[in-house]
Length: 144
Image (cartoon, one colour):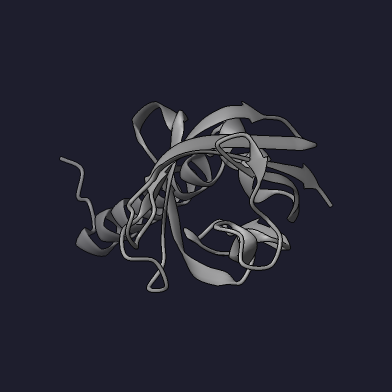
């Protein structure tokens, strides 16, 4: 009959648990999708901000506060021109939801293009004040 020391079994189980946990941690770290890496890698700079096909980035423009740098951080926060807030992919990573305390509702934007150098988003918005006009928005960004 072979005697197994209880402490050795506990130690083996702890070592095994540590190894499994370490492997799981690194597997999760490396499971970021290609789109996630492309989006969160660079700082993006606005290229064009259009509302109904017209430049809306100038002073008083509906998109003027989006002018500047945009950064989608890996923790789901970021800055978007003068706004700071949160972002997330929708299922399938085909859309982005951007929310900030500075806007009355989150913006859901369709990702039309996402490469290492280019980000193109479209969305539809209703102006927040009368006459409540529907706007077709197109925002393009270049990696800085």
